[in-house]
Amino acid sequence: MKLDVNALRYLSKDDFRVLTAVEMGMRNHEIVPSELIDRIAGLKHGGTYKVLRNLLKNKLVHHEATKYDGFRLTYLGYDFLAIKTLVNRGVFASVGRQIGVGKESDIFEVATEDGTVLAMKLHRLGRTSFRAVKSKRDYLAHRRSFNWLYLSRLAALKEFAFMKALGEHGFPVPTAVDCNRHCVIMSLVQGYPLVQVKELQNPDDVFDTILGLVIRLAEHGLIHCDFNEFNIMIGDDEEVTMIDFPQMVSVSHRNAQMFFDRDIECIYKFFKKRFHLSSEKCEEQDGSEINDDENGRPSFLSVQKSDGSLDKELAASGFTRKEQVEMDKYIHENAEEESSDDDDSTSEQDSEDGDEATVKISSLKIADQDSAGAPDHTLRGRDSNQPETSSEEVVRGTQLSE
Ligand code: ADP
Ligand code: MG
Image (tube, rainbow, N blue to C red; front, side):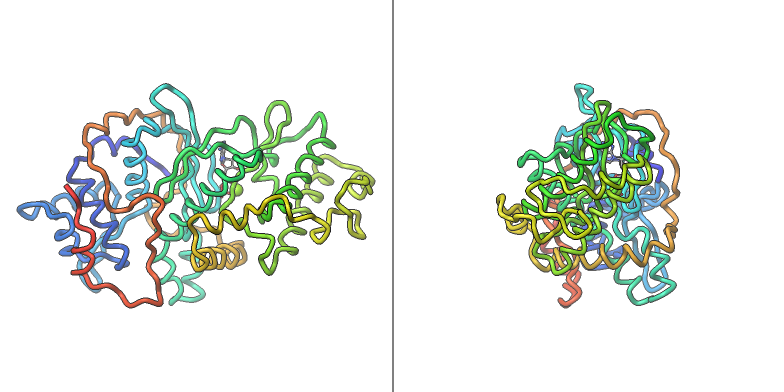
């Protein structure tokens, strides 16, 4: 997806005010009625409508007039709200090239005022499911497209919390810097995803390190669940960094053993194929403290899950059980549904390599307007079991404080 931050420089305080109003309205509306946006934004003399036209021109909002006249945020609009907030906070000052496109994320380089380059991951849960699910089950498509803001924000929050906790426990992960909405800022890993590495000096050592990580994670109560050659980065000295944590589960998950075995299987399979690791190495009984199962592989049941309990710590750190369940359901259900259809279907998501030059956006600080709309680390997705709040309630509860 093209992220033209240049546009961001020309957006005024009022533009951001209205964009934030659309975001607030989306807590209760898939398409936010124009008049509600106007009421939340509270601009004088019908200013909101003029601003909305400008936002539409810049593809920050999407217009719909089928049932009633209204707008919703686009990914770009949501990106800008997060970027603006983080820039205002002084977390970074410019956005550079795109360095990764995951199935459900876009990764960019960003730079701080003093020139330190960091990685910015924008989560895009729900992106790939629009078309795939729409064609199969229309009612779900509706609900899910409604929830993409919530799910993406939840994924970012979870990833940030896990990255931070893992780093604090000595795991080789990027340093978690900050998080806002669907956006995680972390240190830039120097290296390449294992999938791009054609040759290793010490494949045996790297293999052992990687397997050791899966085991140590389980000892800490966690399973990565997507531990493969795309989510393992290899540095110049063949040091290993693991990335990508939104799908991690606790060892007490009912499918824990299956997830653990699958992670282990991915590593075995890849090393056998790519680095021709001998079957002895792959099957060896190396006398480690982990008793191997009949295939000679680390077995879930023999991992001592007593080294602290990160899973419980994390469960207590901000995710309610319900949120966890909702997201896990989404992630694990969609892994299957989406493998057959990788298409984006919303018009604003042109898949393009973002090769644009670094754009300085520190000037944004001048147009200061804190987005009171989405307090950080606060999840307010729509609960489908609860009745919708009325527009009046939204207006009263979320008036912009300026
Ligand atoms: P997804 O959840 O979409 O798979 P990932 O977190 O795995 O996203 O990131 C996708 C790609 O972006 C990775 O394979 C890697 O190439 C790159 N990437 C992600 N995080 C970093 C980072 N901190 N430093 C450098 N590259 C990164
Ligand atoms: Mg990944």
